[in-house]
Image 1 (cartoon, one colour):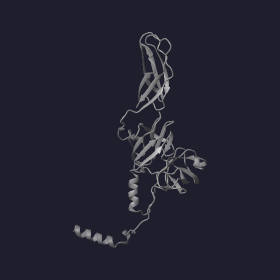
Image 2: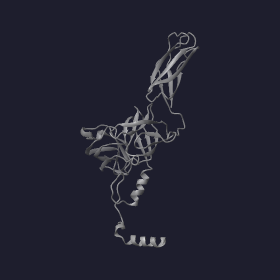
Image 3: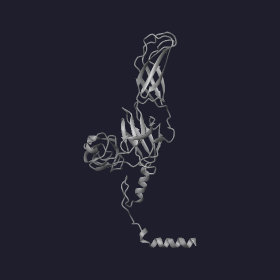
Image 4: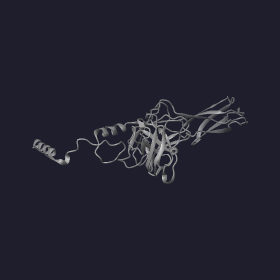
Length: 329
């Protein structure tokens, strides 16, 4: 009976016009949520894209992947066919954008990345100078009108950060529901500079929710870090970082010492190290030996500030010298 039922069902399915798809279907662009028919090539491209690496160069500030802006279209420039080297013109300035929004350019291989660094009225982006190219992408043609799109949550599996940090950087991931915005990412923080890169979840209106996490700094992907978010509450480490060397930040105090100390008394100095947190360890080394009977140590006294204390085991005058500080993550 089971075999007979299967044959009847198959015959009915073959005769039914409701299940006869067209022989071909138009190829849809990446980053689309429309309901048009799509080819197997489109499906395969989406799967490949979800495993892609996005390399971007950063300097600090906000990098918001959860933009609320729409409608921005630009004209790109490059030499030949390849990476976007500049933005020639703004075709449509759009609305709803915010400083720090990170967006993808259509055309080419859909992999050029730009950041909004200034906005006009209503969150528009009226000038080419309001955009910074974080990664030029591949396969673009000069003069192409490119729509600027927010990347979906699963548009890449790996984000590789490079550049010299001049301030702390915040990466904001898109929020949504447990079904639509839950994801895991590998982040390679290959930046340099004594500042931190943190990952947070968007609150949907340009801010963040949760405690976020700090992405350890390394080089040549030595600190690849797997992070995950449920899309609703926060961002967490999904596994310990694979750092092969300790991550450290450094600085130098002003001169400490030069005045007489009684036995057990101390003097101190500080140095600002933006990436330092109170959970980190400190090693302090004097630039010149301060004298017998003198001891010293360092600690993170508050976020971004390291204090070095120079103390006398006996009544003595420690030589005035600077102290080189290393903060270990």
